[in-house]
Amino acid sequence: MALGGRLAGLVVLGLLLVALPGGWLAGYFILLLIALGVDLALAAAIAPIRLTRTASAAVRLGETGETVLRLRNTGSRPLRAQVRDAWVPSAGSTPRSHWVQIPRGEARTLTSALRPTRRGERPAAQVTIRSFGPLRLAARQRRVSVPGVIKVLPAFTSRRFLPEKLSRLRQIDGAVLVHQRGQGSEFDSLREYVLGDDVRAIDWRATARSGDVVVRTWRPERDRHVILVVDTGRTAASRIADAPRLDAALDASLLLAAVAARAGDRIGLVAADVAVRARMSLTGGPELLPGLVAALTPLEPHLVETDPQLLAAEVRRRSAQRALVVVFGALDSGSAESGLLPLVRALVARHQVVVASVADPRLGELAASRSDLAEVYAAAAAERALAQRREVSQRLAALGVRVVDAPVDIFASRVADAYLDLKAAGRL
Image (cartoon, rainbow, N blue to C red; front, side):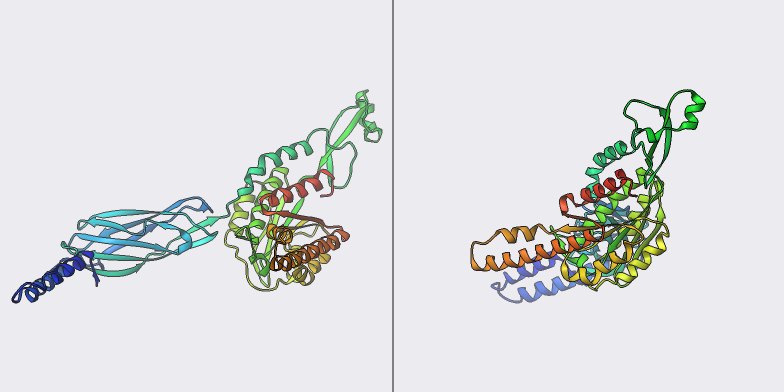
């Protein structure tokens, strides 16, 4: 049972009658108790109320969705109720509660807005129903479990870079790309020789057939393999710009996949720490982005040290041929020694490797602030951390690895640029 606000007001009113003579006060509270019992008896039972929930459509992080709850009154009395459709706090459900009146045999729908603050699957909690009597002095109360979930997709804020990257891809993939065959290129077409063309590109058989000098043109090879390796270990949980490092990796993965899909390449995914958290076989075409989003959405960081041998073995399973492997990890010295560097050494012999790590702008701010003794110590620690990142980057570069170390606002763009640079150089 739950007490209504009107009852509290009537109790306060009764206390104001203390000064009245005789048994007025006792009589007042006896009448109030009788009214309370009658009101509660007239309240509709909650057991006959049937609740169903319409499945909520997926939304991107930062956007607003909705949940629809349907109540059908199969009881013998009209329902006057306050209904709270509770969700986990990160689902951002509003309003807090609904007031509803449902005559017997009828149904009503309640719609709540959901503005999630975290990516992944946000589940519904219990629905609380308070069924009031006609005086609304007291209510029957019951909690009912009505399962529901809203899938919150990555925000994909880097999609603003997509037109720029596709424009550059068209330039790379244009008709006059490469006049000489190289690694990562394939035959495109024949055309007439023009002044300045490399004579080594002349196709002598076609020239003999046509009577005009004809040259071959080449373009970057399509259907190349790109494998995204996402470290979901403890370093992925560190927050940069008020978001986990993992979220920046997912955003960059989506931008890179969108560009690679347009380029005709295929994308695979491995996300792991001490266990594989998500995997996707090599996929291209229109199925790529939906499949990648579905694989990335539920990922969460785990506070464990990543097993580099597990990641290397999963990469080998994804592609037997030479591929571009993009590793999203951390350049911190401690974690790199035990995780990133062993992983890269296991991959560079067979694959072209790019290591992408989000730079923390807070380190630069701490290194520049030296107004008092505490800030001097903080600056020294920040300088040491920055120096260690540079050292790890140099060691990776010595292994032939392309390193992307950029702030979160341009991180995804730099990762896509690394892919396009390799594409333009014919190294994929």
